[in-house]
Length: 99
Image 1: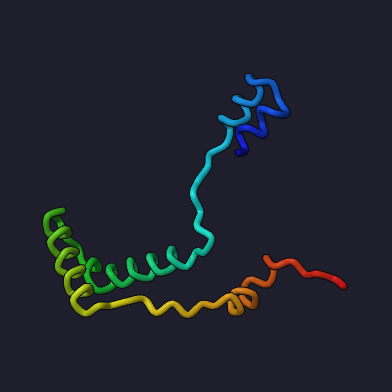
Image 2: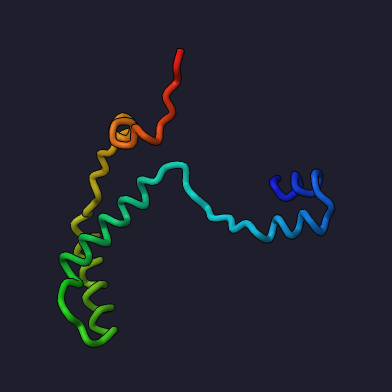
């Protein structure tokens, strides 16, 4: 992998120094799960957490009740952002190929 490549090019000490400078974070191929999570958290906030609660036990109780209600209704996020939509909205991020 990447670490092996560093060892092929640099001495061990230098490769380790370079390796330690990186922070690897898992990023899924498709970001829609993150958007759906943000939408669901927004619904939770709007329907359940928009008032002041002075005890964490109340927050836990209310959140659990909200979760059970959503699960019983089989509520889902209706994700409709397609690849074509992304190409339009995020055109500046897509390369243009000149023929």
